[in-house]
Length: 231
Image (tube, rainbow, N blue to C red; front, side, top):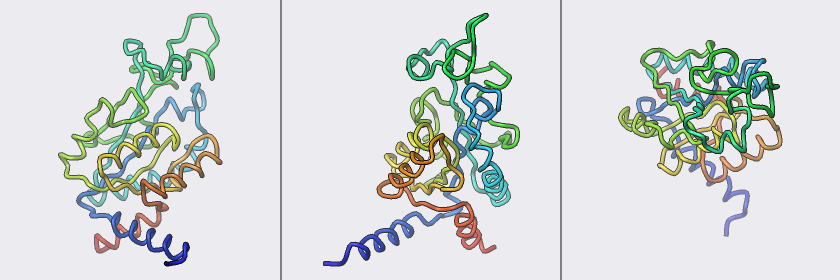
């Protein structure tokens, strides 16, 4: 019987081997880096997202320059689809009531399609998708559910996914779980994913790394891709 530490080391080595990128079959996933979650005036502003933005920008530009597909997702809401993301779990996503308070805990129009302003669900200007880049809008935490994301990836012959964005325990985590259920080989970038609570973020990395994904930093991923591309 091998000691525990050696078994873990062997497992991690095998995870790395299985998840080593094939650049032509790799896509960068930018999950929900949108105005409604990043504008300081929005009801669901996540300040931590700005801290990792430069690293995600660097990855996006690297992928664009090297012909690696970049896929954006956006969490969207419509009053015509009254799912539980609004009532009861996210009152901020409900339509604002005239003359009533708005902000965290109140109906605020957050992520409603076409609302404009700080609650708008479009990807932030700093990461603005190019016309040829897929933008997947989803009404649930899991961006595979009820969207063409899987079809989009398969028609591009994608097998390997690089996960960035937010939130680790909600939209990003749900989408990552769903990706692995479809047998995509996922690498989660620990310096390009965030959520509100540091302890929950660490717990999610532990869950991802045990059974779902390879854990990398953005620099590790760029270095690996550069090596594979002969840079």
